[in-house]
Image (cartoon, rainbow, N blue to C red):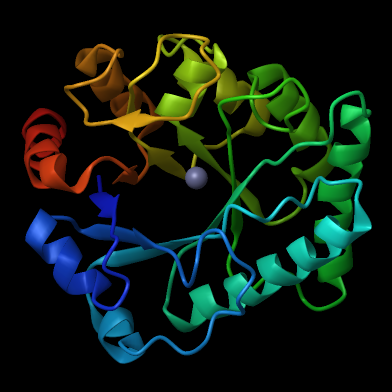
Length: 256
Ligand SMILES: [Zn+2]
């Protein structure tokens, strides 16, 4: 099982990952709060050649579910651009948050916008790497907060080249019991391609998205380890940098 971390030093992701003891790194290809088109990575050759696996996280500003053209159109473009840039680095996927519609709008409209994202890209041969849709923690109009919503989304997009990224902090804060979440998500999607293994600073069902180190949040660490075992997918920690090396060592000890 690959165990790694989101690296903040985007200029040297492999070196940073190695210092953590990671065999997988996740990185942004630009400002996570911005729309800048990702350019050539200065360490592209090193990243491609490394045994450390790579996954790219798309910017948070992307919301392909949005019914607002001025947000949805740039979001579609950004997903395609980031998938291309991720492919240049040899990444195995591009993580994109499920997004949401606005309060009072039909969730079905957001689901349809997700479907159109893939349908339109099909004419261009699909995305350069698989899009991994990630569950989110908050909001009543989210596409991928609750497993029931994820199931509805998958009915619309599941036939495309799409994967799922399960964030444990988001699931917990979103109000999804972690004891059987892997089974329930798999029943909805048929797959889990990546686990964002994060503890939570906030309580169950809080709807808040504040990550904590594996042994320092409100989630029982044994439950997090059990999720990894059940998911049997690559694991990325998105937790405070100071604890990452210790947390990776802890997980390797327990997960082998
Ligand atoms: Zn994420």
